Image (cartoon, rainbow over all chains, first blue to last red):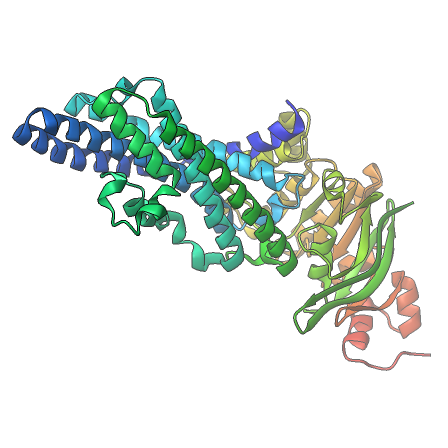
Length: 266
Length: 244
């Protein structure tokens, strides 16, 4: 194995070993996505029963939105909480005196994010199929494009959160759980962008997630893929990821200047 | 050849000058002690040597690599141990060592862990979570971690702090043997003067961010007219006059 890949695997092994020893951590991964899916599933079933076919489309849109938004949330938390694990164990000093490059740490955190998201969201997807006969995979291959775009957005936001933790220490920890929830109203997760006031719509349209959910609703309602929205989501994600990477690189250097890598978490 | 070369190394935090334009070199294979009271600048100096902290001014080269531009090449051949930097508590000792084996790209990491376990008497600890170990056991595990990559340069920050005399003696003995067998260069920050006298061929005395004296333990004892390094340390820390 090439040294860089081995270092990335070393950091992932560190987190996987942690999960192997802690069933509450494993349970926590799937708990919230499953709970969300159950609540919205029953709500969607209620609408569908009352309103017939239009309600069924609405129900499908709601369940798809819940599950796909969890992809973004779990991806963002997967990076940020794995980084926080290093701070809580006061291990950063050892990690950053090893030959591990900062980008390799980020790659390991992203790898853990993919695993955490899969372990968290897949049970909810399967339960949605079992309880409500909602098959997310019926969206077809485009589902992968939706999911990848939401994951990348989650990583961008989490790199911003990690940068703030490097800058402000434990005081910024709460952002690891809350920051993406703050973007929910503007992401058009459960309603079209057109529902927002006109002055808020530009805010929504700079979020990759808003384009993903507009595309998802179109796919569920018409079966057609709106490539325009997908292209916007991908382009915005590139900009967000580049911005987040620059912010992380800058704050990492600031942390090395201030000595925060040794004292963070104390 | 110098394993570590430091020139004009300075670290300033706003109005505080933590390290003030120090110069020193550590020859390959030597063990050098870094002595000084709390706040003298020892830990800051070590953090800069490890690349954890960016100096305000000055230059560091380790094993011929400029730490400002090429630190990863040097870090692969260095390691570090400090009782003040923890290993993940919920991972077992073996898992912790395996993580660092991967980070340092150690070949046959399982065999290396077995070697270290035999040498540092860690066999019975390998399956235990690191957080459940005593202070002495944690120190031995931290030492094993610092030796996982057979480093050419080892930086130790108070390696025997909080150890009982017996365990401290074992660790010192092990460090002596490792250095003799491997030719490793060791920079040791310590408050334990007997330890420094035993292990170090050369001592740097730091005070208020500056190196205020240096020499072999014997030279320092002679220069200050004292019987042990502890009295030399007190002479420097309390600004007592030097013996003629």
